[in-house]
Length: 368
Image (cartoon, rainbow, N blue to C red; front, side, top):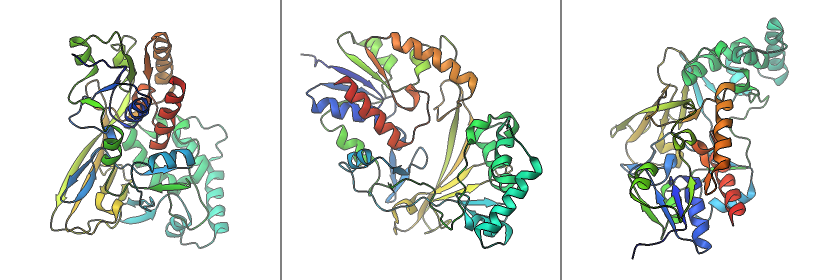
């Protein structure tokens, strides 16, 4: 007899996998359909020569939510990796986020008072009271030098638009620290799962049926889903056949290079390239996430580019136009009686991993 499922879950990323895991604990049968040829969504790691390569970009877990931290630690042990990116501008190296190491290198100063004086003086030169775009917002927050060297080029590459065309809201707050601290995140807990992220999803989906290389559209063409509730983590506009128009995203292209004869390429896991003229935004050296000493290394260059329907979406462009369109799709979603929309694509939000876990657990609590 054909197996009966209570839930059809579209996508095997964190949101879908957590929902499936929790539903199974409550005695429900779940089927996951996944359009890729592997589970895990964007946190999937590909093992290359003993190095866990973050196939869809760097994923560094961080949270201040104790409940989320305890939850994810059921499935993996985390190391003590602390994200401390380095920025390259021409022949200069700077620490991120903006802190006293950054300011000391940029201006040859030592004290927080000196740094504040320079930044306040540069802000006063522009005297911007009501920033109308990202450039004005940045200048009003950190002044000309930091903006031109570390913000402008990187941001324009990331979004494919001039900073004067981007909304101020993107950087309403920039992390500026007047201490010598390169820890990028303020969160209480952070790290990388020892052995990579795949084990987390594999444990969550143990005993749950998964169909790989199967889209939601393909599955519903061939199968009756009338008895199932759907958990949908794909693009919300795609679910509705783009009938109100397509939401906009930026996408990322990765150029991954295996270097068997190089043990340490750049000395840091994350190095940003902030010049507009350098075509990639950053280089990831994956072995440094897990303090690996295996021979050789693997690097990935990230290129941000325009998105169109059919390409993998990464960053929602949450400007006024797109947010207004999403609200219209949200109204349609609320009219759907038997479907839960969730995750980055289902909610048209850029979520950190801890926020996805939080949202999935909230959805589970609401459902059960």
